[in-house]
Length: 449
Picture 1 (cartoon, rainbow, N blue to C red):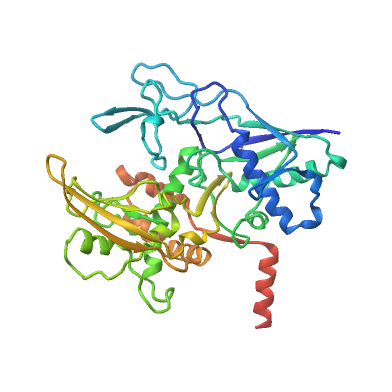
Picture 2 (picture 1 turned 90 degrees about the horizontal axis):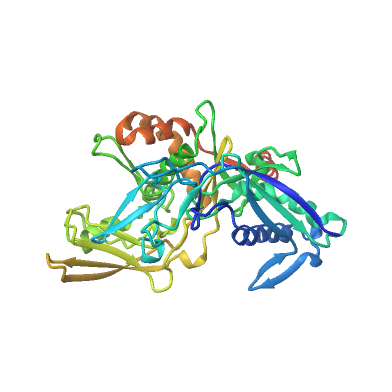
């Protein structure tokens, strides 16, 4: 006997969709089901007593597909792009209208700065517009699940149990690790579902059953743009840092990944410098303190497809340094952001072994005015051989708490830093969530000590 049930989803942020201009564009089962299958498989691995081999439809390359089907239907109409340039409203949000002129990219419309993508020819349609659109349905979407031949509704019941934490921990579409394509479960078969609190959700987290979160107080997010603004601020604080010294000299904050490796208390009494000093000294020959370090510290928390260092030190537009690897072209940041109601979850992922102690090539090219390469250099840098992402995020929690007052003081509530200041005001603190079992174990260790 088959079982069918419906799940009403609330949408928190736009879904970046490569067919966003099409009517009814929404979540795709081809993306959601494999992720949910993996989530189920991980759960059953830790709870083998709940498993049933008859639920497995297929198993290919260690990926298990379970016996259920899903479809998605949008509820109501999507938010419309604001009319501009005398153009009619479009039935999608965030229109990326892009034209190429002399190898330059001109972008019109509301594009959040968290979004970036490779702009090859295949990224555009026949009208010169990006194929990726941001779709947002104020009334959310409905997912329908069909489970054929479900004896005693056991698989259906497991799905109903796991779907809420699954959506609470996952985003979808392009730039999903930065909070785009965020949904939450509002109802299952018409029955309301509340948002899981962090301690409940931590048991489903992929790395050591640990996650971090921002709990919004009086200054809660009122729009999806504010969620994404907060993700932008936090991701910059954690990795690249904030540099708005063109506004005022104090509007600067060094990325915590660099500070973490420079902290001798965290690195067995040593200071581990980043590749920036190495690039200045060895690649750009700018002099200063001799750089012996070859540590690619920022690479351990994400490697975009095009990782280059424009020569912002000398402002020479014809001199750039690029990072490359023979096999690893792109590595997603293992720190995922997930807007979810009154929470913004920060979810550490498991870092693959391939990213530890991995060598990358720094390749610099200098061109003359005619575009001919007149100088090339190559050097090798390497990611850290050991990195504990939980310890690093613990450090981020502590440092943000210590530095927040200074950040508020240094970033003005106007002009270029206004959105940064607003985000710092909203993000009052970052907290760590533990499962009930872990919290009890820690309390027991303390009592025994």
